[in-house]
Image 1: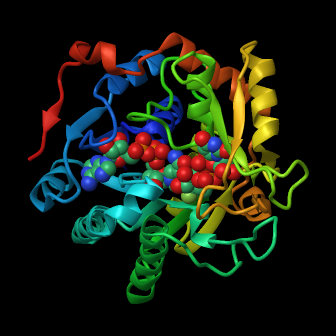
Image 2: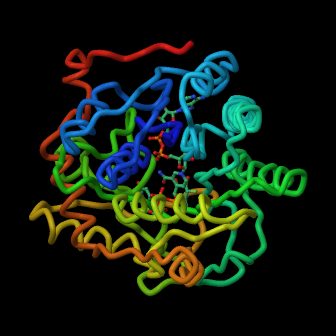
Length: 349
Ligand code: NAD
Ligand code: UFG
């Protein structure tokens, strides 16, 4: 019996693979490396001392997915694979609808053909759009404001429809808030292509001297210091939430959405301060115009995940910043330098 991890070479997927391997699960991992590097696989094995099967496969390739399900006794799936850049989704919506939605449809088709009905899905707090109130509860109205977010909202609906059609489906919709940080070993972390869009990798690269200064997008929000407030969660806490969600879908049926956050909001300037203290590096910044589409404040009500999944984030803001800096300073060019070290990747089918 194995757990299939789609997008397992990515940022959150790789950290989740480590936690699952440490917990003794057998893994089959697939990724097309559209936003990740093969080197991460070697690092996962190095951290855990455990092996797993990997396929360089695309969820858009129906035959490849079929072949993986035919060759392995899969009993549940954790589905990370998808594109995630909000801005790019606005300029290239078809690319996002096709990859995220068609990819998920192909996966669910293969799952039902092979009698696999247990699924943990990477959704996002972005499905809430402009929050009506904070902290945000799971029953708050949904209203994604960009194509990326709409792919997540649509997939949530598709998975609910699947359960209506066949009540053997058991699905956890995990709505992540803002994952940051890295594994404490400094061997795996976030490795964005080009100039980062998100706050934490941008701050890390300013600290490392790769970028000159941080642009703070707006200081006139309805928040304590005027800068945007978000719920930053350590990626290892998030990964552990997947283990709890997996245990839950294996035991129950139905579709449930869960907020995975800390329940606490921090402003951009608080993040700058926390990072400076954790890293000992100065983060020069300038205040710029608001970024279109950003909201004042977004943080989770985490009581449902606390109670129903028996999960809570444990790591502090200092842990998040120290681990982000440890990853950045040990891997100034991300995974790129070591790509040639990877061996034994299988291509499916
Ligand atoms: P990531 O880009 O690092 O990981 C996604 C992985 O999926 C990548 O390795 C990529 O190569 C792979 N992939 C994409 N399309 C594929 C396809 N068609 N077939 C096979 N592999 C494919 O992203 P992440 O930050 O690890 O996010 C994982 C999931 O969580 C995504 O679905 C993302 O939308 C969601 N999410 C992320 C965040 C965040 O801030 N990082 C927040 C909310 C939700
Ligand atoms: N910010 C800056 N400067 C930057 C980058 C960000 O000031 O260079 C600010 C933003 O304005 C915002 C905060 O930092 O106030 C956080 O921005 P991020 O881009 O890091 O994160 P978002 O909350 O905008 O969005 C992220 C992901 C989305 C996901 C959402 C909720 O990009 O895909 O978290 O999970 F949906």
